[in-house]
Image 1 (cartoon, rainbow, N blue to C red):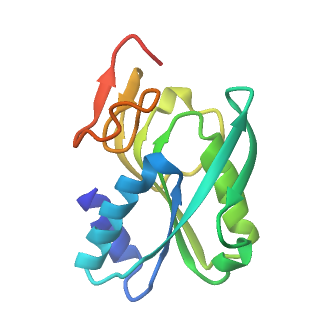
Image 2: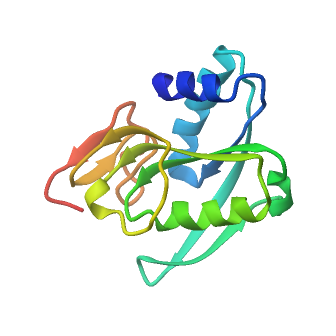
Image 3: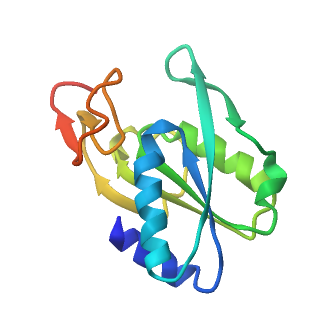
Length: 159
């Protein structure tokens, strides 16, 4: 996360990015990333975006709490997510942000499963790549459990 923050601070030197946090799982990652940016002289604002799903994997809608897409106008936006699995949530949130006409848009994820990506999304910063298994810890959970772990774990045999 510190390496991602250092890279973003260089890319966004002298700007105040808007960090978009995708739901509960990304909160911890986004908070640490924002602290890393601040430590490097790049203050960041945060806003949370919630993705709602229906029928398991089909993305139904993306709802932005407390604002509309115009909040992104002429801003340097960094979308943060805990995991890029199929990429559909990131794809939908990216489209929402782009509709607000940002100055720039970057995507940072803590974990990526490249073999499972189904959407054509640009991931500018990736913490870790994993082949499979269910990822838990550092904000990611299994049916509400294990989110509070201070490390990432992979539950083998699940996906």
